[in-house]
Length: 184
Length: 192
Image 1 (cartoon, helix red, strand yellow):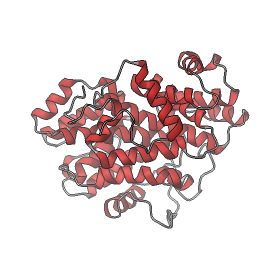
Image 2 (cartoon, one colour; image 1 turned 30 degrees about the vertical axis):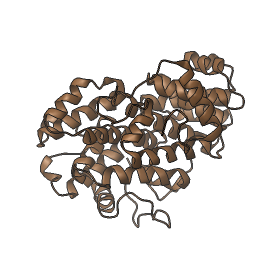
Image 3 (tube, helix red, strand yellow; image 1 turned 60 degrees about the horizontal axis):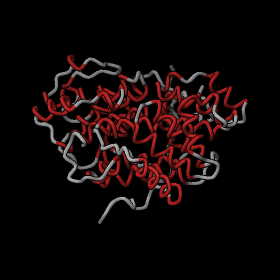
Image 4 (spheres, chains in turn brown, purple; image 1 turned 90 degrees about the horizontal axis):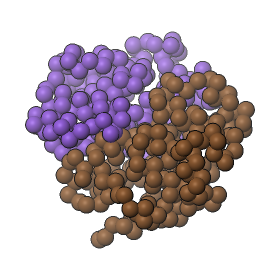
């Protein structure tokens, strides 16, 4: 149950968005351009960064939702997502993504934690300016989403079936469509 | 030196909004809604939340810009807010604002630091659920901006005049992106 009276019983971030729909639309448009539209990084890798940062912020709702979305995208699966939550350095991903996750981990702590050495390492592994930019912004954006969700005590479902449905829908449709879990 | 190649005559967040305008557009719309949209909180009060969180995150660019904006808006200067000031006790503000800024302080650390008690304290001093919602989201949004600005090591001017000029821009023109992009300033500020 959220800390405030949202006048709806929709789980997770969408219950908060329903409380202030104008802001909800802007938040979903941001998620759409950042995660679901054409970019230098694949959709899978962008969702993995989102899920990883959410795991570092201990935001169960976002980490599980975006992990499920990554698992439903080409090249993704639940074991990979869990390996990254546990230790991205030993997860079965390429060195470029490892270097980008290292930057994301620093961003989660605070922007000033990112060092020139972190950036140089990512560039040496083939990370472009656009890859690095999007990694920092995805990490920063999930530092927002995670705080919004947990700071207002949004309802976090325990049922894995919930995240399965979210993962399948968002991997296929992006962020601008109505949730199949919300009744009219 | 920024970590990536940005427009050399733009500073802080402006250099990033210019780098990736397709992402900047929804980000600017969100900021405009929260800080300039209709609200029972004044614009100065909402800018103060932005400034406070930015100070806690030690983000000089955002703290200086939003402190300048707070002080330019009606009722802002009287609070006594200063750039990079994190002590709420030093501010001359209402009990309601103290309650809301205390929630913002928790949000800056992590969303799961906020308790029902924090919410109840803010409510008891007159805060509405919508004001609490907006406070949490503004605090969260500046946890985004501060990381974006410092995580890519954007240029941070050291001249107070730079932030006064920027404060005037955001208090008069707001946060929506200009259709023809961002202008470079006509002078070169000193950089931290």
